[in-house]
Length: 371
Length: 219
Image (cartoon, rainbow over all chains, first blue to last red; front, side, top):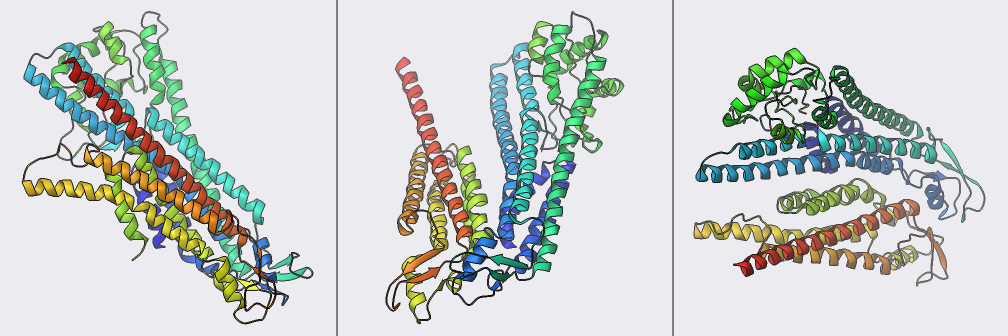
């Protein structure tokens, strides 16, 4: 069982940054697969060859018949299955850690830039926008400064979805592989005809019933894991589709802001409404939350957003108009409770062009999935 | 002493590695160490007891087994894992030396002791070359010792005291071959990762040196 601690430690980190269904999947993996394999199944298959008896005295016949009956033992097959099914999660974890590291580097760079700015004196509007744009990029990459948690969006969300898809494919491949190799149940008697056995010999598998119990159990757990993976995919896909539908329903038909709208809209699909649990965004206990709007930006943002609200057909990504407005009004306080808003990549480009009449909203968004 | 020791050592290496280096550590942990400990060890556990020759002559089985398996696959695999992981410790030692030096002189000598530059870069490159070299050496050893990456079901043995050419049967031949191919595959993957990390680091630092030289020439 100690050997699984290698994998267990890696997967604990994945556990922190998964959705609810992902956490359930990991728990199933830990308890019903690794633990059962390490403790019970291994001992059941412990004497598999020593007690594999063939009805012959011909030396070597048992060896070759066992080799023919079990090209790869069930236990080893399940070990490989667990490893291959866990690997996509580790790839996602690698990407998430990479995001964290990039965010830390970006923050250090920003601190240096601000220190230099303070030395040179005189903040220009452009410099402020650049720094906020950098922060916006980091939000797109999915890092919540308040809670120290990874927010699933953009490329990170894509990696997460691909990891689930590959995991599902691996699961299916191994279930099919097990069926092709052994069928579902193990027979007590195996008739073997292979040199040097002089004739077809009867070979008897040790503990077939106990092995069948574990085979059925592991197969059921694999099917359950597959189901959980599919549920997670459906959950992610459905939320995304729902958000897209609500957005396209509320989108304005007017042409003037159309150009401005479409670009942010193209970026928005990458965000999606999370399950209700994750609407609560954490703020760090020592109140170190850094508002996405620096104090210098606040007044400019106010102007822009009031202008936004005045204009017709204002875009509302999450479809929660009243909530969004009220949350903006309390911006400084709410900001400490919510995850940082997500800005589409070209939002600030457009802001520079259409400063006060900017269509895109810059209110704090509550639909960030911090997992 | 168990593999946990090696795992803890390698976790330290992770801190001072590049991105590709971290992928290498993950591959070594997941696809080599874990597979070895969880699966492969058990396959080769009773290989001597299950090795059977078609003869009653005492001692014949012993000499035949010894002839065909001078060093068992599983022991070579363990040696390979250890040898291939240890060059990474050179980097850890160098960083520890840097930190020690800073403490000794009581001043900040390095911008970041863990950053791969200067002497640490040379150490890192040497560790990569050593790792790649050792991987290749072990693959060649496997190939030469066992006549290719094959495990036959039947081997013929005529060494004294066997009175004639006897048939000897190796147990779980197919399963052993599957895991041997797995070993070879992961070794090749690690070689590719090491070589790409090596070329990335050399390329990155030559660009850096070139740009520095350009800056100096402009002044």
